[in-house]
Image: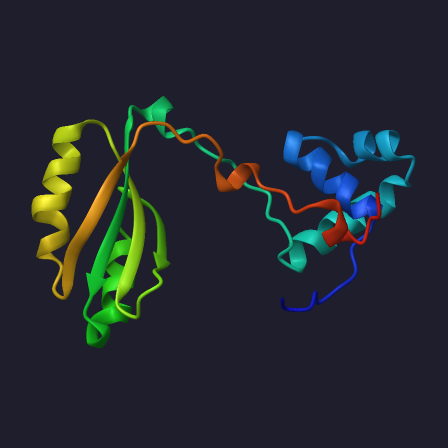
Length: 162
């Protein structure tokens, strides 16, 4: 386990929990809920963002835009073209997630589509048109039960004993 770069505490945890529930919550509201000074809350939020512990962003719901089909896709990538492949995949609007897989030549992606025909076209034509890429396998994802935007580490990672 890699060591933490900085100490986190109960107040950091409380701030993150409040922002996690509602990223638009004001520092004054968090201060009221935690009993901390509003200036302290603002400084802590700034530190959490600056140190890349969290980022405040809008999370879009793909289904609101008609993207109802999701697929996890495992690719084999030519190691000599890896950087080029990753850059190309990362720029494709269908792809929501790009990561290296367990094997030395594997790349894992998640992609969203408006229907199964778009997915089929993507698997059969779009991905194979990328030099050095082979589709190894894929799985339809009927429903995502928990996504990364819902994850928060346990309290002990903040140095909080229960």
